[in-house]
Image (tube, rainbow, N blue to C red; front, side, top):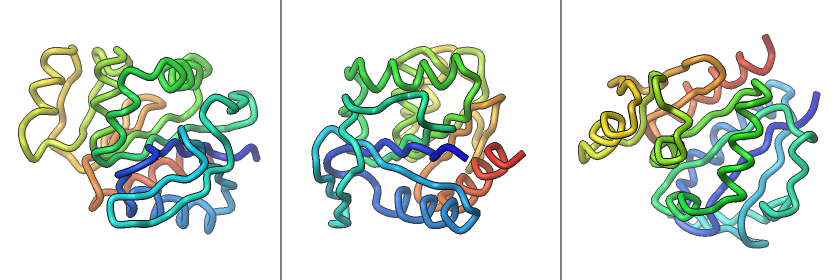
Amino acid sequence: MKPLLMLIAPEKFRDIEYIVPRMFWEQMGIPVKTASLHTEAIGRFGYRVLPDFLLSEVVKDDFSALFLVGGAGCLVFQENKDAKMLTEYFISEKKPVGAICAFPQNLLVWGFLKGKKATGWNEDGVFEKMCISYGALYQNSSVVRDGQICTANGPLASEECAIEMGKMLLS
């Protein structure tokens, strides 16, 4: 099986949203690789990751799925053409795409959730309003799967999201 690719922000990614899904997938026998914008990434609580690839080096065909890790730092990708094109590739190829916490905001802005059910970090009510603005169907749930896209609302959904993505890959 080709590895799943996790994309993390260079700083302030949500540590648990990286660590927990990765451990679940590896235990399921799904290989995992990581990409970021820098050669080192530091999570909100100090977890350090040395990514396998820079985002600009990723060979899209080498991966079976894409998981977009949340946290405040992930909004750095909103204006990043490489991140958008990478996500667009996985969607167009009908490969599983997961996004957790704040990262679904990027999917909204990029237009990938229009007409789809989705969830994301909404403690401040912003995600629900963004769904209305960008034509997505907000769901007040921890994890939502619509086709090949799986969204999750935050750190407490890390396990559930990892399991759903694992099912998508292993089915």
